[in-house]
Length: 267
Image (cartoon, rainbow, N blue to C red; front, side):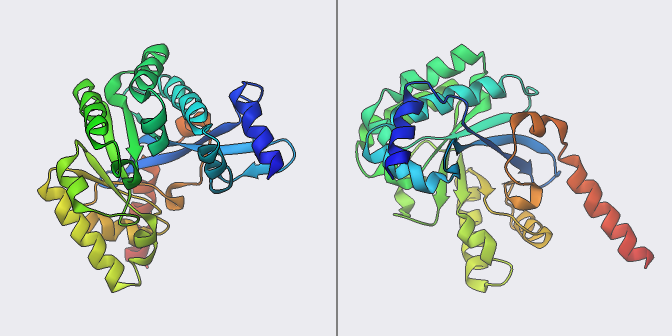
C-alpha cells in the first residue's frame, strides 16, 4: 500500500509519465468496424508490475490525487487520438471528484486544444455517482461540453444508484450498459431482459448504447438484435497500445463471421 501511495505521488510529479496507458477498442456492432477506443488506466509499477485501477484509483481519490492523474490521462488520450484517422474517437473516464474538486471544464478544453483534437472526437464517460451532488454545476459543465460537440456517456448503467431521472434530465448522448449484464445475458433471461429494457429506454430518449464486456460472438449477435449500436470487450481483443490499435481493422470481425458462415454451409 505504501508503495502504491509513493508511486502515485511520483506520477503526479512527472517522474513516471507514460506508465498510465492502455486502449480498449470500440466497435460498431452493425458493421464490425473499429470506430474508436476507450483510454484505460493501466499502471506499470517498477516493483509491483501491472497494477489494476481497482487497486490504485481508490487511493488516488482518497488522497485527492485523482485530479492530477485524470488531467494527465485526459491530455495523453487526446494527444494519442489526434494521430488516429479522423473518423475515430477516444473516450476518457472522468471521476466525480474531478467535477467536484478541479476545474474540469478548463482541463478538458486545454487538453483538446493542446492536442489539436476536434471536440466531437472526444467522449467523456461519467458514472452515476457524479450526479449525487453539485447537480447545477454538473449540468452546466455537461451542457457546455455538449454544445462544443463533446460526447457524454453514462458509464456502468444498471449499477450504483441507477436513477432513471439522471438519464432523462442530464445532457447525455450515450448509455454504457454495465458488463455484468452483458456477460450473463447469453445464459440468464433476467440479464437479457434488463439489456432489452435499457435498449428500449435509450432508443426512446434518442441515446446511443454501448455494451461493455462482450466476450462471445453470441453476445454480439444478441446485442445487435436488440439495437445496441456499439460494443467493447475481449471478443474484439484485449487492451492494447495506440500503435497496435492502428494496425488492426474491425472489418476482420465481419470477415471472420462470414468465413464461419460459409464453412458451416459447405459442411
